[in-house]
Length: 380
Ligand SMILES: Cc1cc2nc3c(=O)[nH]c(=O)nc-3n(C[C@H](O)[C@H](O)[C@H](O)COP(=O)(O)OP(=O)(O)OC[C@H]3O[C@@H](n4cnc5c(N)ncnc54)[C@H](O)[C@@H]3O)c2cc1C
Image 1 (cartoon, rainbow, N blue to C red):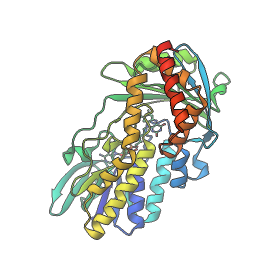
Image 2: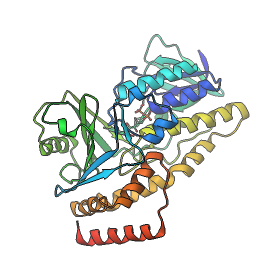
Image 3: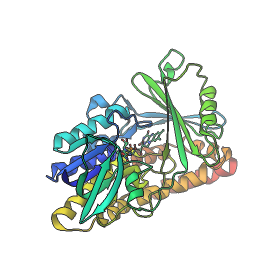
Image 4: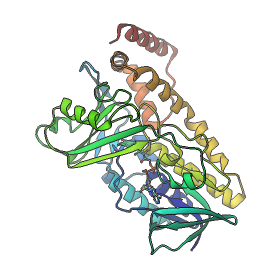
């Protein structure tokens, strides 16, 4: 079988890329190893994403416009988002919907684990482990196959940095945990994560509770167990899930005939571990560059240039935040104290919801700097 483009991986990045390509009339095959896949994920997405990609209401299990930040000493700061909300989705439904949209746009969706990609003439030959899928001949490839991308390995892209692992458990609601059902709770606590944070995300019929860490230094299972004990949950989870999070873009994620998008390219922001937005945006930008490349011979590198232009400042800013405040409990205590400031909340949420750096007036910036210094010296 011959196609113009093979998109390898049917998560959010791949499904969006395939939909954009097919809509433009490019013959596209989307190869997903498991159409029933449940990607380990908190499923928190910003309003900007919901609007841009027209995510239907029935997929948003909760719309949450409040958040609790909890410090190591147990201080709780209630934060409000007057201008929007965080949507909670369940990845098995979300990914399946996005793939069906790609199919509706004209992409051919096949189930098969890609086991080899070889250069051939002006394109590639792809083989999968599924006997029913014949060898596929394609002109170009979009690798959307996640953190351990087979595409990146076979096509010799620079390595993904995979030091953070995240674990999550799902608990059906019981009267004991019902209190957590309508707000997001984030724990900045060294016992729960010495270098990241713990989250409690409410879904329609369960709580998703998880934590992350650099697994070269800490044991994720021990941290997760401690987190559940600290919350006071004695029930058993009905699902355990874990996966690596690539929180640093690869040195390069574009080649002459192939590009990587989403986790395959390492596009998850430090500090908050947000990847769905960047997966879908990179899938869209990558596909748009691919269309210009196939139709007008434009080089694919414009995709990476555009992505970095739009989002490098966000990656940089969050990297600095994580390096400064996630180092020890004293600094985490200061960080939570600063979250009490209404201007900090407004700037944080406005930036999160639409991924735009929102400039604050000079006087507000000075006030925030002063509060930062004050709380860092005081340690609370
Ligand atoms: C525990 C955890 C919690 C998270 N919580 C959040 C959150 O709340 N909000 C947020 O924004 N981000 C979160 N993230 C990050 C987010 O899940 C990822 O950034 C996002 O899924 C990336 O999408 P993707 O399409 O690039 O990759 P993926 O979602 O990983 O999709 C890759 C797809 O490729 C398929 N595949 C892999 N190899 C092959 C192969 N060889 N052949 C064919 N198919 C293949 C896989 O089956 C999969 O469907 C979390 C991550 C973890 C681990």
